[in-house]
Amino acid sequence: MSGRVPVATTWLQSCSGCHIALLDLHEELLDLLGSIDIRYSPIVDVKEVPETDLGIVEGSVGNRDNTEMLLKFRERSKTLIAFGTCACFGGIPGLRNLFTREELLRRGYVETGEHCGWNSAGGPRTSGARAIRQASQPTCAG
Ligand code: SF4
Image 1 (cartoon, rainbow, N blue to C red):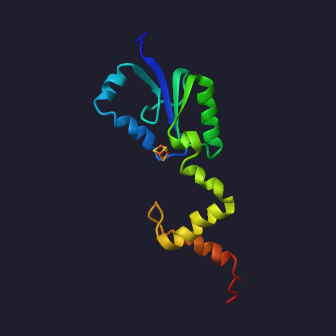
Image 2 (image 1 turned 30 degrees about the horizontal axis):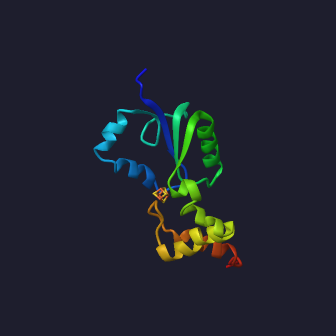
Image 3 (image 1 turned 45 degrees about the vertical axis):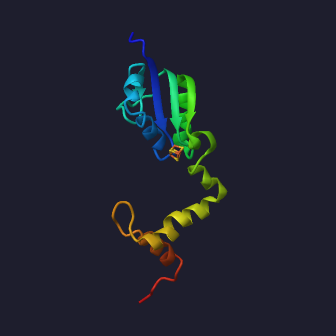
């Protein structure tokens, strides 16, 4: 046994900034790594959440996968830390709770696409908006 504390970390709906903030410990990170054993994390290629002494969760719960991951962490961590504003209070992802699902879908896939022009895959983002508009118009018989 190494004597190091077994730790698991994960991010749910978040920007990953909380994990980046850990890296901002700079050389003090080396001292920390001498005390902990990272058994599961976005930076470790492990598929199953192991049992650990300490679980650290970044981000808020926004879908079923997030819920399942959070419950696994709760079940398998002796101590669980909600790390950052998103995990503790909802943060930026939690702002979606101020709107209906329809408002969010329209904003994300129709209105934004019309202004942006391109999606993250490099394709024309307006195609979804155009398809929705065309679907609501009468079909051309000619
Ligand atoms: S609290 Fe949320 S928005 Fe802030 S750095 Fe962490 S994940 Fe990103």
